[in-house]
Each structure stands twice: as C-alpha cells, then as structure tokens.
Length: 126
Image: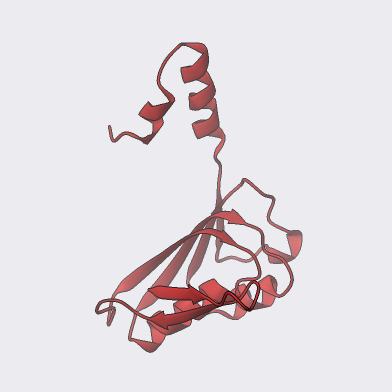
C-alpha cells in the first residue's frame, strides 16, 4: 500500500496504489496509530476494491477521536486490533475491536533492567 501526505494539507493522507495481488486474500494493515480512522479505512477500502477477501487492521495506539466510531463501525474491516497504551472510549466498544495488553512486555523489560539483562532480548525471536 502506497500512501502520501500532502505537505500543504495538514493531517490528510491519500492512498495511491495497492502493491501486489490481494484478490481473494486476507490482508493485514499495520500502523502506528489510528486517530480518526480515515486513512486506515480508506486503505482497507482500496484493498477491498482490489478484491481482498478480508482486511484486519492492527495499530499500536488506538487514539480513536472524532468520527472514528462511525468509520470503524461502518467499515468492512472484520477486526481492529490495538494495544492498551490508550483506553478505548466507551462509545467504541464494538465487537470487532480487540485490545491487547502491553503489561507483560513492560514487566519483562523492567525485569531485564533490574536483573542487568537485555531489553534487546524482548525483540529477538525465541
């Protein structure tokens, strides 16, 4: 997925093209944050328009402000997965939102620091 930001228009992203053949596939969109849901829902729509069977969205931070509730609810995306770095607003308690806890990762990082271990080990495959 190629997207572009217009330097003259703040907070607006356009989806320019889908890369690869997505027809009949389950696609996973990964982003750092979802604020109003406009960009991620537009990206999902582009994938569906190119024949994707399903789209799952993942993001570290679900900011979910403004029109996000309506956009996520009305989206064809089957699941939105966020971490609990921010609370999910009550109005957005949709069946298709999954919130994952980052507590185990933070606990392990703290343990590694206090035991003179390696925080880098959190990001190595086991």
